[in-house]
Image (tube, rainbow, N blue to C red; front, side, top):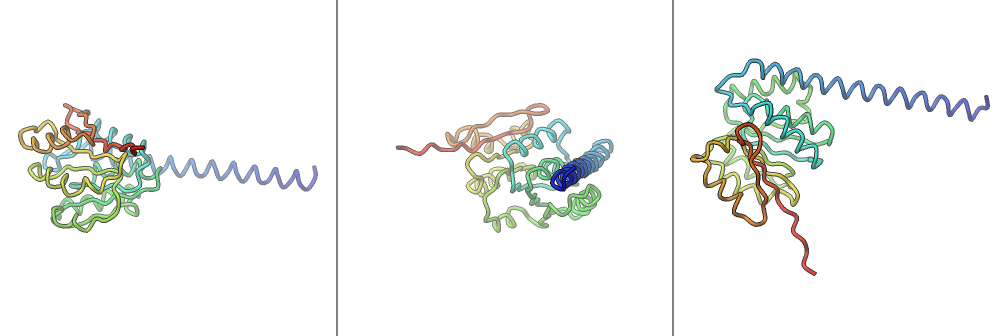
Length: 216
């Protein structure tokens, strides 16, 4: 075997080992996140108002499919939906900024994010999201609203201009139509948006901000 062949052989072995270790690490992180999700799902508390698992899987798939880098979540709760976002963001290299005012929920979320090993990709902003979100300047790939229902329209009006063309606006509890009717009207009547309702009881609103074709 020549020196070149031996070097090529060693390089192939190192590349294969690197691929194996990378896959192992990825699988390990994914399993860790899923373990925490299963633990939370198995001990659901009504006051946490977590999305159903079916909806969590859906937001994960949607987030990864558009290669989201910047996700903004209104309503952290105990971090359950945030973990579904992180399951996608670990593959896109993105980050989650999530807003919560309840100190007990914030403490639980921090614990869950840390235990799942995703705390390095999550920023929790404490306080009133109606005020705190005024500091957002960067373009948003995915906006997820799951907070005070009467406030949905305010969050939408304030943050939808920051959602990039081709980005998504997701909203939970769309089955509570009387409380979010003005939001539903806003996302279904705007010609620049395309909206559908999916998930459990069609409770997850999925709105695409259309890419507008340039006029020639």
